[in-house]
Length: 165
Image (cartoon, rainbow, N blue to C red; front, top):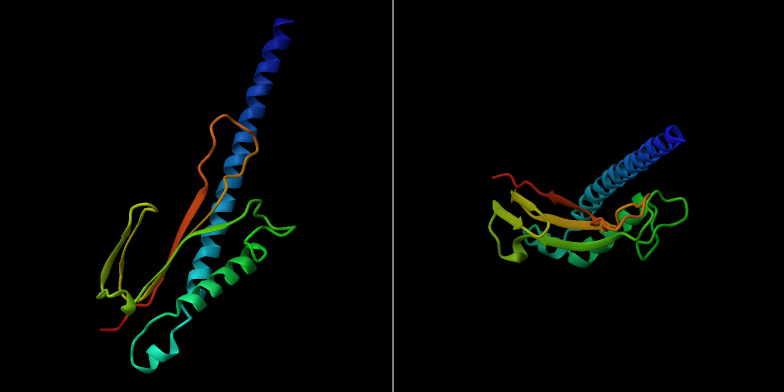
């Protein structure tokens, strides 16, 4: 009987470790997907130049068009609907939230190069030119419910134009 109790205990520890590893692997895959999709989306958003400002020799981005393009790119790359909720068949399980979307260009009143810092999301970067900065997040995948709630996965992305001097 003692042997069976020990064996059951070892089996439980093994199963818990295995599920914990699966959860960590899911987190890693999801974070990687969010990072890739975020990088593609800020790149796409950075292509939305303000044509009127461009005709006057200023490199500025159209905020509304850039944000719409950013969200569209996220939807297409992650399999999301209009409200950024996963469609059936998407690897993402929870809604994706855009928690930061910012454009830094000449209309922001900065001179380049410019040290951009956002301590809330851990972003520090010398921007050489106009840039799109975004942070997206989703809930941490849960395989084993625990008392401690995991922090959401937040992923920053930055795309900048490097101006020739």
